[in-house]
Image (tube, rainbow over all chains, first blue to last red; front, side, top):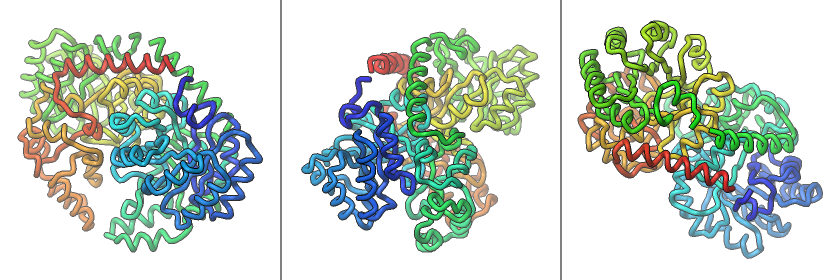
Length: 313
Length: 313
């Protein structure tokens, strides 16, 4: 495949595993990179010390490129970035913030920068900041999400219209057909979170993974819109938030119900009742917990079969 | 193109123009059918007498197949169906109701039946009812919408997983790239509402069409969730609904604000402030008001170019 994302990141397939809180440790990142994609360590749920350990273990487990995702709203972002630059991680995916702040510094150290966006305004900011590529994430995606609620189907052509930057499509993709659709819409690569969150090497609890493979249509929802729109499973925790919102709760009321580390409690510790369970809408399509290599091999096969079908028509 | 929807409906391209209230009269339906797609008359905003007139004028304006969309919640559904059977319309698209009620009666008269759904439960009901094809409509779509909020990217593979029925993808499609993506996801055809609502032959007011071509990302939203989830433009009418909901309004309160014929006021009469302006999210991609034939020709060209690009990769 003649592809900009492959060449930029030095990988075999233009498939990135999203750097997800409580799921994306060194086990998942190295497994995805070893299988020909790009694995990301999710630093959103890590201290600088824990991140350093995961980077070092990832490097021991693979000689392929891998990356780290850094949400720029992390309270320790400067120290996380220091660890990343010290450890000479090949690529950083930044999200939830202004791409101008870190891109230059990371580039000076020879680190590639990809920024996650959900609208054209930020796509243009990325271009000005000189990032190497962007991830455009649709409304379907799990976890934090854009306020415009633009779906992947609309977002990818919209972004492609305003910029020629290498473009990675995220949100709603878990199959080779989804990958082919993303490419038809104008993407150069795909990022999958949910599909890899529900894999053998994901650090999520077994309780969370089992719940995810039993999810049906309509079982996830974009919630917490008064704080940061976040796609979660409709469990007891969600219902408490929803009830408060229906009764006219303020942003502060909602923050109090949300509290601290509710995603750790849910995803990592397996409290599927009272935890915050971030996952994408495409979980309804997922019914097994395979190894990352099986996921990637299957998607590439489905992509090739799908392309043959399109040609045969 | 070797395609089930083309053969089923006897058309040149597997492209359907959604039967939209206040947009889809005989002018739009016949223009789309003459251009090689399937035009639908939208009976949702018509009395049986008005529908009869539109069917007869459509037949005078084209010798190609065309259809009528019937929302099964229409208070005059039996009389609308009587007109359709009398006039021997070749195909009926039913929506918002149970496909069992009318499919058999329409089939007896030799009329093909396509039913619009937004989840697998209704896809299976359609199979049992013996419909000829289904339209699966994603969260991006304008107007009435499913409660699960499943986007086209997730919905199409989800429906394809449970049924082999001919499948038409709707929601978020306005380009040949979108059509190619829908096919990659498993669809056999596409239905576009928004793209044809903003066409020369659409019956919508000039005020509404002009507003639609200036729409930006995030300017439409799925609203009215306490009644029937409906995607509309965020205008003054929407803000009244939103404010009431934020203050804990009941279903009855919202119904009172909604009142009667607010979509007629907005779409047809051009009151873009206080009218209910139903349109899809993909309106943000649309910046001109071409003739239906130009729309179809452009989409087919984009589809072919997009397929060549996928092959070249």
